[in-house]
Image (tube, rainbow, N blue to C red; front, top):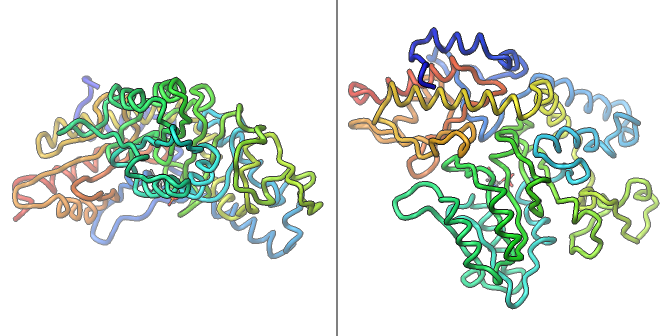
Length: 432
Ligand SMILES: Cc1ncc(COP(=O)(O)O)c(C=O)c1O
């Protein structure tokens, strides 16, 4: 990015040359707060904005409910009974899975539990789970409770790996070394695809290879990876993954989650699972028999009937991803957008900001996690100033501001505006 300039004209030129720029019109972006000239929505890593077409699609389902009542379940191509099947190809392509490896159901932590029922099967010798030291708390709790559920003690069975002392991110070789060192005692590895706090992309293919080499199962929490970076789940060959759809996938607050289970497991009838009627084949489900008759697909992990309204929001968002041409073009823009942000921060804000996200583009997604300082102001005060000036971003305890320029709806001008606001909020006169 050496030929870039810091002026506003460069931002405008980059927007004019951006083949995905028009996708911004697909979204309703929150307006600026009172007193701010413009809004910058940099928090799609927490809750993606509303895709405009979601209003219509959700309304369609509401109308169908009003018109058909219960018969809406079986309204042919718009019936709710197999709604998720209409979304699964598109969802699978975003995570690099095969359609029969993917299903859309429940929420993320619930799904992690259901998948651990299948893929965490400790024995007296092999009972350990490896996670990161600063795993998202929900993952940490889920793993601890799974260990206890099997009669083990997290003090003995939970292995955590963190950055080296004084470092911010985990070095890939340390991760692999921890897997190797736990060896025959390691039952399962559960890691994020992208770390929520630092924005670090985890070395997923290498982790899969290492875990499988020592005989452990391996799964990924893709909350911050799905819709953010390119994924090749099938090719990498992990056992399972789960993600939410409300972050980079813009599919409504608490929106429905996705799971992926490798093809080699989908027809394994011996794998333990928590069962429900929705895990049986649709063809026989309504015969109300008591023999579990699962399909040879990830659908057999379903328990309850699907949620049509959140899926309608997801349908809207997935269509926008398709319009973008999928993750390839989006990642290409994302690398430019976040690279431009890094460049402007270096040039204009300098040592008042420290990014704890890896600098190498391939080791990060959209997000930069920033520690900011200014004489006489705390990081939290700077964050409040940025928000007041019209930037939606987020504060993560203890001292990080996360900003995530998302290629679906953010522009280079957004990035330029954010840096201007950050520069003003941290400049020597800001505290007065
Ligand atoms: C990495 C990660 N894992 C798990 C969760 C929990 O998701 P849910 O509340 O949908 O179960 C989140 C939520 O933000 C997350 O960021």
